[in-house]
Length: 328
Ligand code: GLY
Image (cartoon, rainbow, N blue to C red):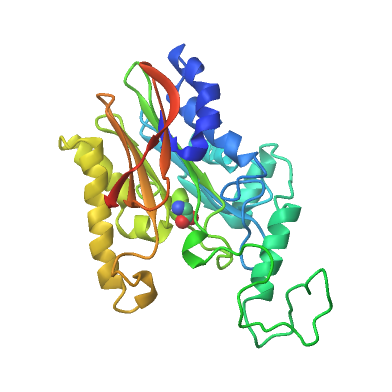
């Protein structure tokens, strides 16, 4: 099992079941469900950062190498486990993806309860973001607790209290790719997507070939981070294609990161903010990859921070390993 760092708790719970003969798709989906139900994970499901209207909209997809079938939901609201609905799309329809209100109605038809996914802390985060968006509207950040300000706080300054993530810090997701002992592969990805996104925005997590992909003849891959970059590179499908051609998971992941860095230079001709002062992409993106021979990798565009990924293999159970950076 290989996936994002937030896949570790679910991997711990699923690993023995997988070793006992569990299906790889069941394992990947159950791993995602742990993060979806965790109100402290602001990148997935309950407690995910909402869109610009303050509404949590979720994307999720799964793919089963045994049947080469996939299912996805996009911009679904008020459903705790979108990854289960993605599986229902795969198994109970002839479609690959259902979007928005249609996805919600489909989930309700299958018995998923209506659930409020905004928590007190993500509602407060959204309010801070909204209050600090513009100095031209009538919203104000809260006054300091200790004294009443003599004049209204300036809207042009950073927020006085609380953290508001910058544009490129609002990505997060859970991905899990699984290779079972019998050689079958499956994968699943779930996310609340880009924080404060435009309502209806769909990221890579709901797009098979971008945020996840597996092939019974090659392996499995998935991503976290800036979904637009993953979509524009058809990233996960391209990684799996390289595995098919004989590349190692690490080389396949680093090659996609190289392409993303080059593609971003071209995109920056019309959107300069995509590049930082060092000329490198201002955002980050990660890939989690497993080949049919059991080799695996977790790679990231930037080496900054303490990036880790979750892995579980028979030789040494579930644990975190450092991500391999493209830019060191
Ligand atoms: N990778 C998650 C997203 O961009 O929505």
